[in-house]
Length: 380
Image 1 (cartoon, one colour):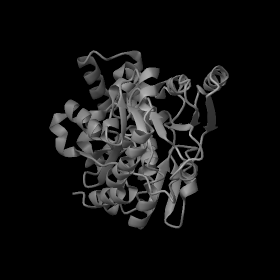
Image 2 (image 1 turned 180 degrees about the vertical axis):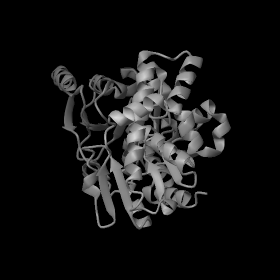
Image 3 (image 1 turned 45 degrees about the vertical axis):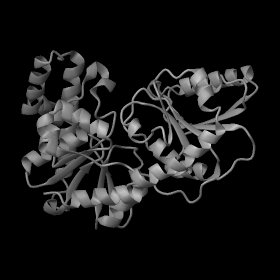
Image 4 (image 1 turned 180 degrees about the horizontal axis):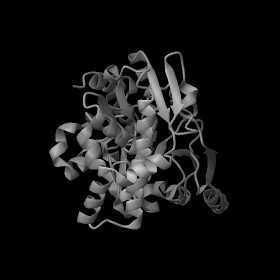
């Protein structure tokens, strides 16, 4: 969102942000941008959800598909409770905003998008859209393979804009009758102020950026890069998460075992700090071994610096990484395969130019977000 927001500010006369508490949205308030917290669902919203028509329709769907459990029932109820609370918050702005000239936009395809669906059901002429990424699209990434109210969201909103073709195809496979409601609108990153063109020594510099959670398999990256004994490798990871302490312990152990391996765990960084790091540090290879993805913004950032990328061929990743600009791998990448990939410095360097050109053509923020703004301004 941080990359996209300046384009929205330039295109619209005023922006009102409704966000969950402690999201940091207040940092982007300006003369024409204001941020407000979303109220948590109270007793009224929680009770209303229990007797709401949509809740009982969702129970019918769960029964029909043999998915009705305590977990799915509670998820459906609480998601609707949160959506009703957000809808109530939006309606409080009815006097301040001209609803007929306002575009209602959910960045996530979740209960916030459901709130817009409820709003549009009440006011059919409103323009309501949502983006859809990865975790909010693929049912398999969730407990009991369940994401609630997807059909009603797609039906009611003007458009749902997936960030990948894979995400669009996934939704079309589940809801083929709603094809006209689902489009691809890619994210993008801004151009770096500079790109390092050479490094100071012959070490291989590897970078990864992600939360340190099981899904991202950062421990797997560490295991592979630290197992190459015949070449000096320095691995840097940006990001934090619940597995950070475990990663620190393992990295220290690996460094002691392999004198050619060193590492830096930089913790959480802002988008601006990540871009500064990429502008100032030469990286040979960016690695992403996630179990599943939409299209990672981190890979866009890496390609904007002309970095060759190695990534698992999951989700929308093959739409940004290919044989010309990087390396696609199955989930079970071996140390031998990794050693073979990094053995050819000429090939690694050759792919850098293709990596940058792919970013410039397909994931440049200036093009993608201006196209997105044109699209939503022309909604019928």
